[in-house]
Image (tube, rainbow, N blue to C red; front, side):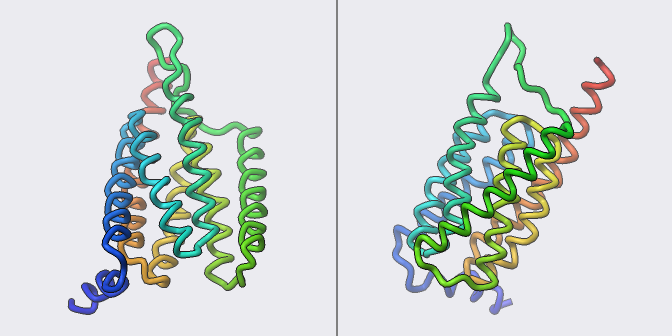
Length: 210
């Protein structure tokens, strides 16, 4: 049991207090954001923005540039998603939960590839020596960004991508000694599974009442 506590505590023994506080704030607001997403509540975006802006800074000072870019993308996409989810026609929201079309699947693949390319050149731009964890980071960046876009347009498949990328990220952050973030992504995975079930139920109910 002591080994588990040491895993979470050791990386923070020499860390500045402000950095620990910022990571704790990002931890709480990140979980709140996914919780609100599961509920199809627009508060997913303001809470998510707080988390991602803080995380961009923390990852920058830790020199995890791929993850940093991923969270920068989140911040930009959160602004778009916030606007898109809030649009109304009369008293009815314009964007309902739906499944991806063939065209949207192709756009998702292109976003995945483009994000990986951009993330790769970000690393190169910082003259960073790429190692296996960085290549994993590049791939998860592509998955996460595509998932973020699918969420912004309320596609059920966003949850499938979150689950896949979260499961990859849990051991990646654990390997890097970022215990708090690793735990956060474990919670994200559980919430994403619940989110998929909840959105699928809403989608099926909407079809039955249509």
